[in-house]
Image 1: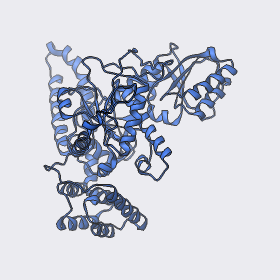
Image 2 (image 1 turned 60 degrees about the vertical axis):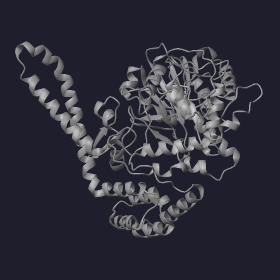
Image 3 (image 1 turned 135 degrees about the vertical axis):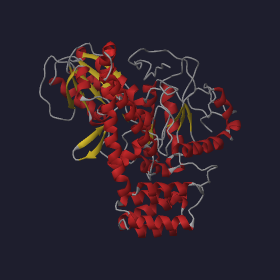
Length: 547
């Protein structure tokens, strides 16, 4: 579905391919199970304000996730959609060569999407930070990609004396009118209005890596709980909503938003609704719209620290290495890429099954290679055509073999299987029993990486008594400072949360748990829909956002 989000009546948001005029549809409503059954093809997206995982098919692990954009196994990922949008932005200027100037947040957006050779293919010969000291360049097109802040606007205006070529301005979110006027005054004073060829809001204010995306908001969860004023919490909610708006703009989708009333997620949903009203959008081709379930982290705090058996999350936990690569040790790195077919297919599958799949795939490729190398003369042309692609697949599988080996070498050292087993046992019941508590205490005494023990305590602590937590912390001995922080966090969490309900069936799938939590949230809200539907605002359609 192609959508258009209008940033204002005078400055329509131009998506790279086309702009569509679409009737307004109330974006923020609660959807009942009956309505859901009427839209069976509408993809379901779980979008917490802090971070979410994505995959082209529903993940089968306990690591969070949501279905890729579209339907079926060929659904396009958010990573590839943002990459396409960014390429369109950089290729839009007619000039063959250009300089890209961005701020730090925009650099974090670009880095996982486009490598230096990719930037060269888009005509970018030089990429510089807007805050760095730069040399004067004449008659070369300049493309700015920045957040719309007062500091960046002032830097752009001060750059007018450095660069004399055409200027293309691209902002990662909506440029507020006061800053637009400030920019206009600065350009007019410098006599540079005629040099500005394009100025657009591109809605790229979020970062995607292979398998995940986030809003580049450090400590966002503590901020949402926070002790700040109402104005500060409102600003935080609007910031989250602005990032979500960018996500849906890149997806070209106008969501149906579901949340629990009276929580931080409700504030985010309300701000998102307001922004969508300012940027009317609707769906094409049958009216399918994604459902965005915004869940407050307090509803499921364990999800952010839980251990996973899934391939990519497990490798990232054990190896680290950065946003777009994994550290294999000895100076070797494994680059994460959406062009890696094996990674895209298996990144959210359980680690043991991935080891088996890699072995089988490698044997199949080696058999096919032997067959091609011994082909008859009549099949020589076919062998010549097929062999390069086959060797490429073999090299990719061999890299995965190295990655799997590195992960397995860390599993036993870090005791990750034991930690995962204890976590799964804790999640299968309403509370932690005496036997499990003793097993946890015994495991914590033998851990070499203290942070793993802290994660285990945080993940199962909400289901345990304060006395159990105290014994576990004494067994782990992470230090007085960490003990105090963990104790205060769990105490505050118990005050915020309702008692933990036991799951209807045992499952180690984190997404199942999140989905169950979201369903419970929806049921509580739907029960109040009847009364609130009677309320109509003057001059507006009836909305269920007040529920």
